Every structure is written in C-alpha cells, then in structure tokens.
Amino acid sequence: MAMHWRQSAQHTGLALLLVVLALLTGCASRPVASGRDGPEANPPPNLTQVPDAVPKLEAIRIGGPNKPYEVLGERYKPMTADDAYAERGLASWYGKKFHGRPTANGEVYNMYAMTAAHPTLPIPSYARVRNPANGREIIVRVNDRGPFHKGRIIDLSYTAALKLDVLRGVAPVEVRRITYAEIRAGSWQPPTGEPPPVFVPTPATGAPQRDTTATIADRGGWWLQFGAFAKLDAAEALRQRVAETDLSLLPLLTIVREGRQHRLRAGPFPNADEARATAARLLDDGGVEATLVEKR
Image 1 (cartoon, rainbow, N blue to C red):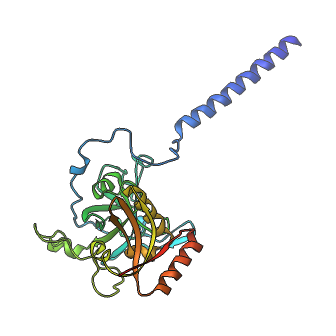
Image 2 (spheres, one colour; image 1 turned 120 degrees about the vertical axis):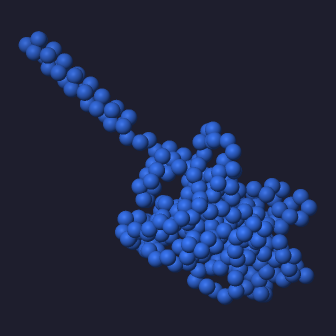
Image 3 (tube, rainbow, N blue to C red; image 1 turned 120 degrees about the horizontal axis):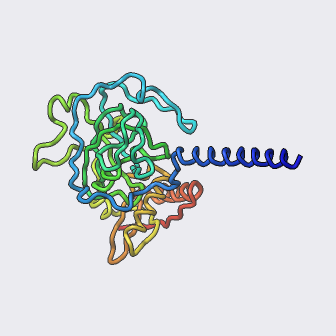
C-alpha cells in the first residue's frame, strides 16, 4: 500500500513537472509584448544619410491589404486607383515593438528603412511628407496600415521620423501621394534649386496652401494663447495636445518666440466672439485652457 502511494505520488509529480515544462516552453515560443514602443538602445549611425524611397511603378493589388477593413469600430476603404491625395494632419512613428514583424502586405517592417503606414493609401505606393515647422521633406514607401488614433494620418518609420525631426512625439505634417502619372513623367522630384511642390488639400478647398507660420505670427487681431515656456519641447508638446483636441485648429497653431519664451498661440480669429467660442470648446472637450489676446 505504501509502495502504491509512493508510485502514485511519483506519477503525480512527474505529471505536474511535464505541465510546468509545457507552460514554460509555450511562453518561450510566444512573442513577448514590449509594452511601450520606442527606439532601440543603439541605433545604426548616420541614419540621416539614408536616402529617400525612390518611387517606381508597382501594381496596386485589388484585395489583400487594399480591401475594406474595420479597426476599433471604424470602417476604412483603401484607395485602389491612381488618384491624387493630399492631407494635413498629425504624424506619429513606430519602432522596436514592430521591428522585424510583418507589415500589412507581408513585408518585414524595418524601422531603419524609409517606409510608412497609412489607413487608406494604396499598398504599395509612395508619398511625400513635409514638416511645415522646419520645411524638411522626405519620400516614403507605404507598405503598412495605421495609425488609428484620432487626428493622426500617417505612421512613419524611425528613420523617416528622424529625418523630418518629429521623433519627440506626434507632430503636424503634410502628406501628398506621388501618382503613377508623376512617376512616368519623372516629375515627382523638382529640379535642383526649385522649391518643393505646393501642398493642396484633398478634397480641394480653394487656393493652394503653404505653411505661413512666420508671417501669420506677426499679424494683428484676436489670438488664443495656451502657454509660454522656456523650452521649445514644452510648447511643442502642448501644440500636440491642442491639435489632438481639435484638429481643425492645426493650421492656426504657431509657436512664437519672444525673448526667452516660446508662446503657443492660435489665430488670428475674425473677431473676439469666435476666439472665445473656440476657447470654450477646447476647455469642454479636452480641458485645454486659453487666454484671449488682442494684437494690434
């Protein structure tokens, strides 16, 4: 009887050991989520010298990564024709959490290549991305889907974000698709010495638009001021928060340097009543406080 008990105990112990080993083996083979995305500890040197993607004719596949899909309750219908596209909004970037994983079209994501993710642009396709804050431009190859946060229109690779100087967080950008017609004609890149193409929103809303931060900041009229900071990073962080609260304010937001202070303002507004109404809406929707300022 004692021997039978010892044998049963041994069998039970062996069974438990096998279960534990199986669990450990399963955990080891499953990818471990990094929790928070970001750069690698030691990125390759000279990433700013990585050349832009070179546009070429690539067939747009019907279906696959270009079929309609739904994420977080939102329905997306990717473009499948060679149509022009231009949009102004917020850019984010993704890094080591997805590095080496498959993109929407099955390619391996390389955070050090000049690629990007977009909710609806054809996969594959090419786009010019401009940072209006510093005038920098890049060309990326779209091979992934995302981002899916309100107000964000493109997710850049680490290197693409580095070259645009938007690694500090979400930042306003202008995105314009490079069409097949432009690729065939070779007009996707302006001749040396010429200014970059004018940004035209889609759908067209009137005259071509450029970033006019430098001149707008000097105008008189009614403005909303959100804060004054000694460090530019703090002002840019607040601009990101205001833009995410109300994307329609994005073209009006500007950071003005006065002495040692960086002041985040929006304007000018046509009148004081409209400025006050905007301030009230921002406070209700996102808890963003603003002060009414009149400049003469």
